[in-house]
Image 1 (cartoon, helix red, strand yellow):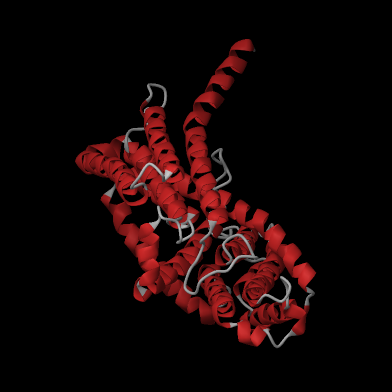
Image 2 (tube, helix red, strand yellow; image 1 turned 180 degrees about the horizontal axis):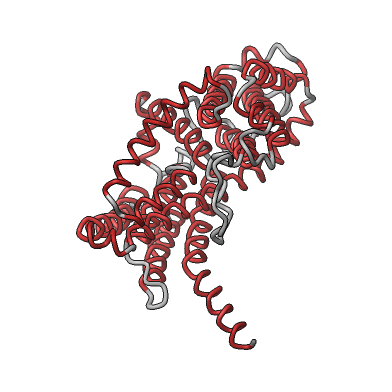
Amino acid sequence: MTVGSGVDMEAGGGAAAGGSSDGEARCGGRFVEEWCCACAGLLAGPNPMMARYLYALIFLVTNLLAWTLRDYGNSALDELQRLKVCQGARYCLGAEGVLRISLGCFLFFFVMFLSTVNTRKVHECRNSWHSEWWPAKVVLWLGLTAVTFLAPSTLVQLYGKVAHFGAGAFLVIQLISVTRFIMWLNDCCQSETTRKKCHLQIQVVSIVTYVGSLLGIVLMYVWYAPSRACKLNILFITVTLVLVQLMTFVSMSSKVKAGYLAPGLMGIYVVFLCWSAIRSEPHTEICNKKAAVATSADWVNIASFVIAVIVIVAATFSTGIDSKCLQFKKSDGESEEDDIPYGFGFFHLVFAMGAMYFAMIFVGWNAHQTMEKWTIDVGWASTWVRIGNEWLAVIVYIWMMIAPIIWKTRQVGSSAET
């Protein structure tokens, strides 16, 4: 999942490029200072740094509420005649409950998006609305969530169809954010100062990540392709192996020269996506015995579910504050002291799409299928979504590697013509 924020990435990039010990010491100081200021901000006025954690808490509570309605809400939802869908099938009540909770969460964050988009300076009144007024925003969130339970089922089902696209957009932004973080980390390690100080450590990490990705592929062959009958799993794993080698070849080409660290980290990421895709296959599949074992052990299943929910919230949070992830060209302008620390509008838009995303993985991207208790993102639709996400991640990574070369070549060509 996405690690770290775009704001922290930019700050970290400057420290790594400088390579000074004073800069490293300041990193820890900034972390402590941010938390102290954030806690003090609850009493001292608008503090967008603390506000982002409170929004994440609202998002987490919404996820837990949606899960509760899906797994244990059938008896309650059955009392409301307007909620019956799928010719009265009870399992669809739980799925529709997830969609209704998701719709309420989406509406809340979309309203916040409309009211905070294009905020630039901390002294604007919209900064106060984003960072304060929590009683009013909690009432707004609860009210919008309650209103969705009065909406007709046809509207909720329509939202479920639209949520497929919103969740897909969320996954695209998330993988771009992860890829940018890996590129930023690789650039820091490729700087002359860092290479002189940590050359051995960088080489060790590069080798470990690259070998780790290959080891993960071997384990997937052993666990999920025990026989030739598992043709689909063999295809997924083999394509992943080819993609890892392709990323390594592009990174090590004479024009790119990115080293082994970036393809090693991306290799770990795409292997994880492939593993997640195979794990999302229905547990009745004979080639998915590992997942079947997991469902037979309650504590393993519950732990996996809890971790998955935490990852959803963390991924949405870190992607939301990386408002520069869609800026493929570096900005020349420097930030001013009274600028907001992250894009409020982008932050809320990502959380709105994240609401669609958690709805899709709670219902397995299909509101008309039965989801077992304590399961998440299971079904053939989930499998193909994750496989598509993996392949798209490789395309984005390769493009980020070769795009600077293409732009530089075009600039040289245009200057030569003039």
